[in-house]
Length: 187
Image (cartoon, rainbow, N blue to C red; front, side, top):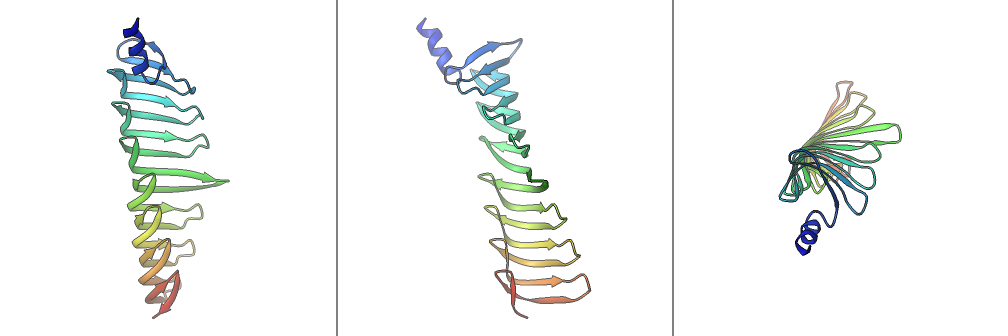
């Protein structure tokens, strides 16, 4: 009896477990979240679907109880990450989210669920940034293409044009100079 109780405790914090054919199991945790998929040694391992108590989902690969490999995390509002996960965190892929009727898209690498490294961020109005990110901000070298045809190529810090860069206007005009907080300060 003590052995059975210990085994249940080890299987995801006293979850209710219903074994299916093969290595596939269905688990309902005490908080209402659910897992259906492959398990190994009492842990989520292989392909599976995890439904969080708030209605969000993760579908993809697991390893030793963690989201690991290729998967898709969908939030209750419909926003989602899709890509490569490592130790439960997304490492690279794309993030699609909405704000009202507008849809935004980021594709690239992540650290702590924030854009970091090389990536592309697309705005609903057609504006697009391609370049370096640091902890969610445009930072480093990048190219911003505006809906009116203008293009800025140069350095960014904290989502602002900062340092050396060139603005190419749709009318053919070109301005090269030093920028500070998004404003041209020296030609």
